[in-house]
Image (tube, rainbow, N blue to C red):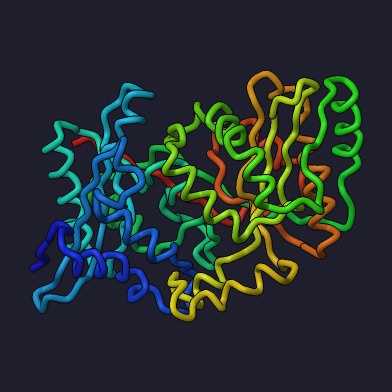
Length: 377
């Protein structure tokens, strides 16, 4: 008999945040999120998305009182306003290999949805597009990146048995860097600079703090515009911006940032690569203190050996201008200089023709697929 309890106490919040660390061993492909950030989401007082969402979190217990699963449910009012479609997102689903546990957890999410007068449940989706989203359905043998997801193969059939079906997919690729920047991007970058008067604002010797202080607001405004039509995206709130910036100050270097401006100084394109931090997350189990921070120190003082593509976006006005070429030319040369051989693309919607065409020009291997599932109650 599985018992479901809604998370309400400090003890339950710790159990919710800690459960994946018990489900996935240290030598698995799973990489946790930062424990403190995850725990903060479990209370309305500390949830940075509480201004535009309503959340509920649930734990599943077996007959011995042991936690065997967890799940969250989100009503995202910003997305409902944007799309006009009422839905509940399920998030942070983790459970042992038992269909009864999945049935109990998803039953709790569905009851929550009905209580909100909503008859559509879909996910896994997070609070915004920067949050964890998607169920891994291909590529279980690969490590999870910071922007990626990991789950065991049994998740999909158990959810399908409960009536959940594919809504859409994301694909992920390994891009092979090579030993020089593709001449097509070099030529295109020069043409675009001359034709539109575009310039790169970032140089390798700049400090990350300087870039954030000068460009953060413009970058977020650009991303809101560039991503607004994609599934699950909502505008960044001030609290969400502050949370992202706090993390970027620590792990991002100027040589992995590109900011392209037009002749009037307006930001029109942005690109960001992240050093691989999933190994440090796994070793620290997502906990920085008291000793976890030492696993992250090499990221500050050494060149990375692995990278992932975090963000790339262009404003509507310059979407077809070739501005992407300026981003690629700069960032690609830097990772070549740093000896990076492979780059994780992270997830891109399978119907995002623009980005898929861009990435399709690189030597690559599609190695992962994740899925958003949906059920009409």
